[in-house]
Image (cartoon, rainbow, N blue to C red; front, side, top):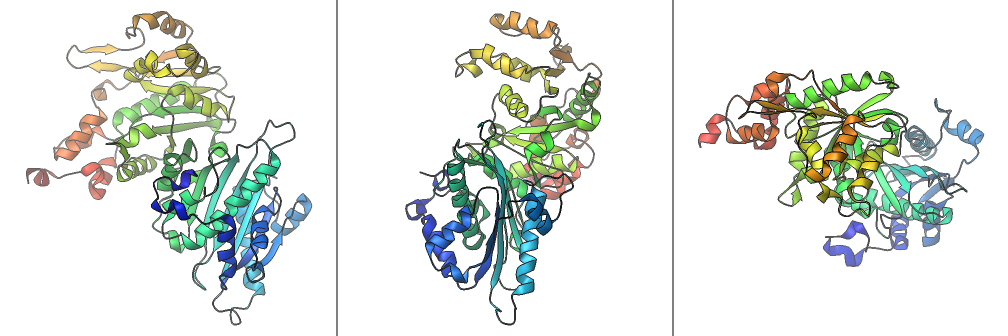
Amino acid sequence: MPITIMGDKEFESVPSIKSKALRINLNQNIYGTFAEIGAGQETVRNFFRAGGASGTIAKAMSAYDKDFSDAIYGIEDDKRYVTEARLKKMLRHEVNLIEERISREKHPNKLFFSYANTVATIDFAKKYKGHGWVGIRYQTTPNEDYNEIILHIRFHENDARLQQITLGILGVNLIYGAYYKYDNPKKLLRYLYDHLDKDQIEIDTINFSGPRFTKVDNRLMSLQLVKNGMTEAVMFGPDGNNILPAAILYKKNILALRGSFRPVTKVNMDIYKKSLNMFLSENKVNKDKTVVIFEITLSNLRAEGEIDEEDFMARARLLCSLGQTVMISNFKEYYKVVEYFSNYTKERMALAMGVNNLVDIFDEKYYRHLSGGILEAFGKLFFKDLKVYLYPLHNQETDKVTNSDNLKVHPRMKELYKFFKYNGKLQDITDYDATIMDIFSREVLQKIQDGEQGWEDQLPELIPEMIKENNFFGYKTPEEAVK
């Protein structure tokens, strides 16, 4: 059963790929072009085979030769062809041609579209499985501004022919969803996997834009990709748009901070600033080639068994307002985060965390599913030159500060801990702000929800105002709390 239809009552009646293509073909108003580069004419092939395509397909083309492609769409600054920029040029160019060549007076009811993909399939050595950009630019009513749905895919199959077939199915699902499911983007997203499995293809980036999607927050769509099992991690920038992970992580030095950020506090920002200074002082860490990632795991987004999307959006908007890049992942263990990053870079990496997080890392129960147990996990965690920057913990009752020197782990883990400690893998953040150490997100959150006063000073500048204006996290005024 495709993952798209889990939980949907209508799964029994999921139309076949041929039925979807035929429905599009038989709609006398849907009319457009197909431009497919890199994996054959796999999408448009389904429309030709379904029948009745003459009223739908204005043109189908493949500009495989790079010189021809450049002559049609222009030369990219980076000289690359499988990019989002290239896809957008293809979509806009083909739509402009339709507008120029087809008279609106003669065809007042036509809904123009351009479907395009630019793809690299698996190489002969089977070391590089391939990826691509797929998109559609289209109208749902005549003369309206164009909508766009653009996504990035990664192939998981080991045969180029199978990848081509998979791409063709995905293309039909996208075009069908764009026209018949645009009013429910969450369902549209799941239906992209009709007759496909997540083991065949991964969608790790998607962005909706245009008049039909003005109320769609692409950060929320990012969450859906991870929630539905379509990918293990997604990223988005301060502008709220999704970012292709490879584009921002490739050959970069990476500093990652994991947390609930519910809400983001002065302590979180102190960890960020102090650990970044330490990271930039390391050998071979170039400031211009360094990215900082604020990571929220899916487990941190769950409330009473379900993901609270409003709660997620509150955290996302607050972090974005601070100019941060956010990653939503399905990784419970830290070593999986490092493994993920290592797919994109061989440069130095670092994790910044508090004492409690480090204690959890040395808990064997998290690694029972691994044949090599905690040793296997640590071999992956401390990949190459990875370091952990440790933020100390202040005990208010004893007034003692815990750092890497007096941290207590399970007796069986003592020698392992010492190994990493004395080999310089763990480094204390020593220039921390002692005046804010007793700030904890959970306590601030409770005050926000109980209508208490005084929590504002524990958060970064402008964050309290955003929480109050938008009623984030169940905010209550003191007056509302009394009621």
